[in-house]
Length: 379
Image 1 (cartoon, rainbow, N blue to C red):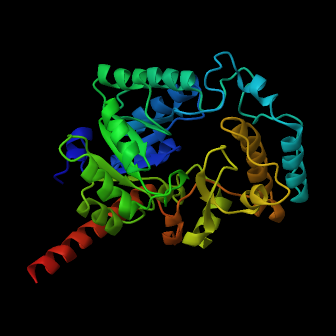
Image 2 (image 1 turned 90 degrees about the vertical axis):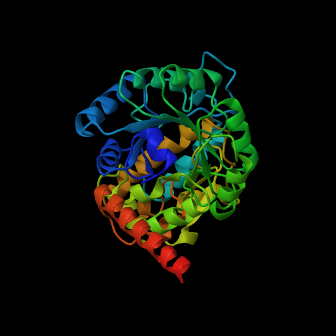
Image 3 (image 1 turned 120 degrees about the vertical axis):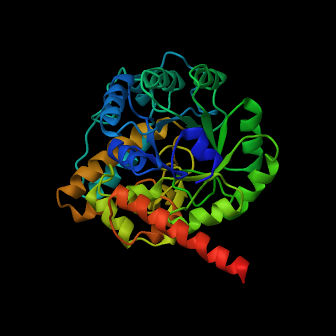
């Protein structure tokens, strides 16, 4: 295909796949797309293991890395915090609320406020210093893109990418955000509509893409569309609006390689587009996720209200980790609490497929859409 995104990243098909699962990243890149590993939540030594595995399984195809460096965070200016010391700031009312919520659904609780996988001396979630260490680790590998979300990337991140000759991408949920990113020196804008899973704004993809393309006209900064994109026909529609390609996430959660639980994948197949909700209940910032008893409880009259980022993560992740474990063990009540980041496109998920098959379906549907448009143009 002739696309500036294909030229920039050295790929055959301008389909970008964000995933926390290394298997998905490798499978998509090998199939001609571009896998992007979500590294937020990893420590540098963990990322080294993941990237080494990808290098060994991607057949030399290009891939990228995504981190979250929030521009605004409640404790960002405090330099000596750890996950353990920050967890001690969680109010007792919030701990009690979560404990009672889990117990009401038959989920075993524990006194600690940290997930089992996190050391107390580890950096807090979304910590900028850890993100920069992750990037330094990543540049020991042949990555072809680094991406950031939740604001303008720090200058250090942009400079590091350019030093290594690697394009820097960033996500934008509004036209003015995209302009700020371009002004800061970002090489690729991912314009993400409110239909998207995870952290997202309120402007729909159908409106946002032409807004951003128009605002950046003549600036030589490609725009990639994101938000609710689950099919090749949607991909073709976004590129007809001026996007150089698409950034996808939710569609990969329903693949056989995904990091999500079997129960969550079953809930995805059963869900409809209106079964998602923008909630602060997971990270402290609005993120779209599958509606469940967990998200409902945080919006209820007995809720103490979500804590600001990153405190909310320190109380939600260990709780939801126990929920998934309990549900997998056969607890039907726990299943009601199971949730994860997912976009409104979940209503288009009919089955669990391999990541490679999803790429092939995108290609076929894209080609069919283009053929249909040519037929229309020729009358």
